[in-house]
Amino acid sequence: MAFSNEQLERYSRHIILKEIGAKGQKKLLNGKVLIIGAGGLGAPAAMYLAAAGVGTIGIADADNVDLSNLQRQVIHTTSDVGKPKVESACETMQAINPDIEVKTYQTFVTSENILDLIDGYDFVLDGTDNFPAKFLINDACVIAKKSFSHAGIIRFQGQLMTYVPDSGACYRCVFKQPPPPDAVPTCRQAGVVGAMAGVIGCLQAMEAVKFFINAGNLLTGSLLTYNALTMDFRKIKLPKPDGKCPVCGEHPTILQPFDYEQAVCDLKEK
Amino acid sequence: MFLTVAGNQKEYENGITVAKLVELENVETPQYVTVSVNDDFVENGTLETTVLHDGDTVEFLYFMGGGNARSILY
Amino acid sequence: MPAHESQTEYPIDDTVDITDVVCPTTFVKAKVALEELDDGQVLSIRMNDGEPVQNVPRSIKEEGHKILKLLDNHDGTYNLIVQKIGE
Image (tube, rainbow over all chains, first blue to last red; front, side, top):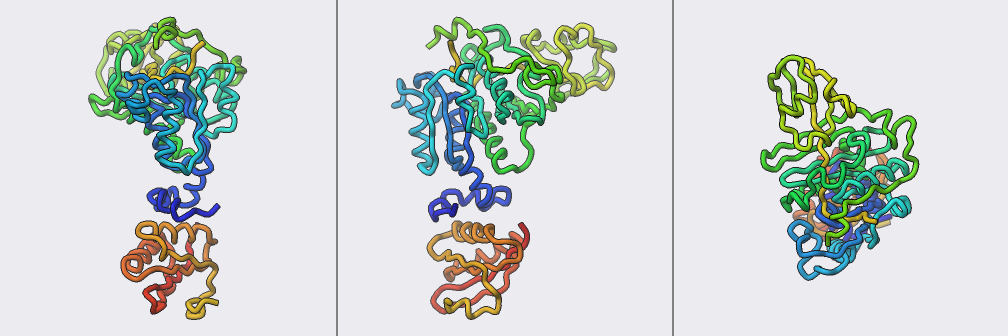
């Protein structure tokens, strides 16, 4: 595949980089990323990955844009309120870069459809807001041997880690199982600074880019935490994968993805 | 004894358990925090029996949701 | 054979014309053409006088490639003959 002059110009700042170059840009153009959740984390990640020329980007989200989303979900605008999030996200991404293909999935991601959804993608980006979804994404990616980026944000804090098959702990190794509904604060109850979604979502996009260009070190076996009030970034070394982990351990008992119960208030919430 | 807790070195009473440290550090939602000591997970239910030693490195790993996209529901 | 190629004693493996783009795409286009070559192969880069001829050779040198010759085509363009060094 030869670059057009327009592509050379569009991606010039990438191609100039020794770590990317023409080869790396081609890898990005051939890359396929699935973003689950077109919300606070998914929004900046989707925009930067679209701009970067990641050739195929899938985006899954069942919701419509709500006015309360706009404080941090920068891929949507005021005129998008009421529109399906995946549609609004797709429009923004194609406006940024018509050079890429955006696939939209206006659906809830469940144990029924997750393996089909992630099939064909090279990298999965978890931009969901609830623990059942985070465990579901982890389990499905471990089972399907997919690399993925996990992240969470609350108040002035954020954290992320990357899972690559056979290198480092999975999310379940660290957190075992979802806490009971409402046992730990979520951003809906506790609030979150909009820019936190930008910081952490962009770091997830950065992990995806590095995954494709194969440069530097991914956050495998590490959890990066960010406290915006103290401006401390900490890269915490995680223990090695738990041999007894029910999904990635030596004798896995979770062989198929499954769903956890959702909190009742989540079901009712708009 | 000195422990390195979440990156900070501090002095603690000799022979305290992980459970005591969790209490001293005012860990939020302590029952749902994952603790690692010297890069090993402290197994669930052993916080009270795991005794810390001088020079140990302790990390608290917190659940963090966020992102605000309800992508799963049934 | 184009006139410029007869002007050089070096065997040219590939040519690229960067007169149709502006900085920094000039260098980017040349860099991409160099990436397509194998180690030791020679690229002839046609570029405009002025900014490109001042900056592109320097940038290519910084990338570690070997500048063999700069030929004046006497039509406001130059041909830069570069040997690719390394992967």
